[in-house]
Amino acid sequence: MTLDDYLDKAKARQNLQSDRELSTRLGAVATHVNQYRRFNSLPSVERMIRIAELAGEPVEVAVMDLLIWKSPEDSPATLQVLTRMRAAMVKMFRAAAPALAVLAAVLVGFSSIDAKALELGRTLERAVAAERQANSPARHAPGLYIMGNIRRVLAALFMPQAAGNPA
Image 1 (spheres, rainbow, N blue to C red):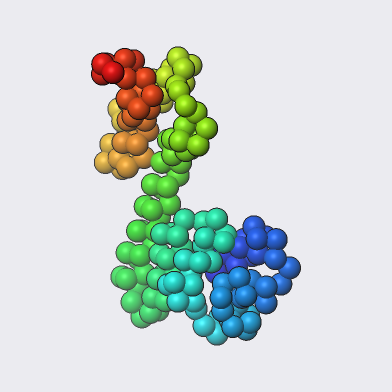
Image 2: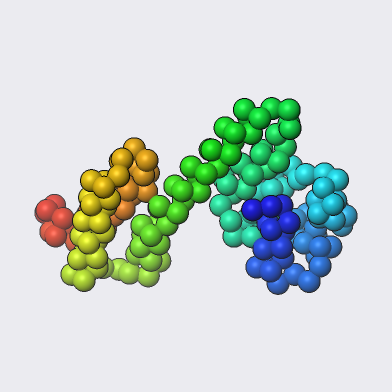
């Protein structure tokens, strides 16, 4: 994403009509967003975090983007490393998203897990095992770890007998 993408997404998600309104929401001087769009300046890390929050984007990836944009052009090695780190972070967030969505649904709305939900957890676990056999586990470890353990976590929290733990 570019800085303009972050700014446009923040405006859209917050139903703001102008860059001036976005500047106000960011707690910035009215001309700051305009300066960002013209590439006259880049936001501070703190302000980039706020932009990402308003845009609904992961702040970790947004800060990595900012570091890439601030990386000196005469340092291609630094730019390469930062770009690879950003790609790995995005991949990790995408891999973890399904498991985090299930966990969020449980924490927000469900007071118990029924057999159908436990079967979904087992299906996720089988899919993770198949993925591990098909690919190098080290490449996908963060997301697979979360998905692979989601059934056991949910069962232990809400149905101790089903998880093999007496209540």
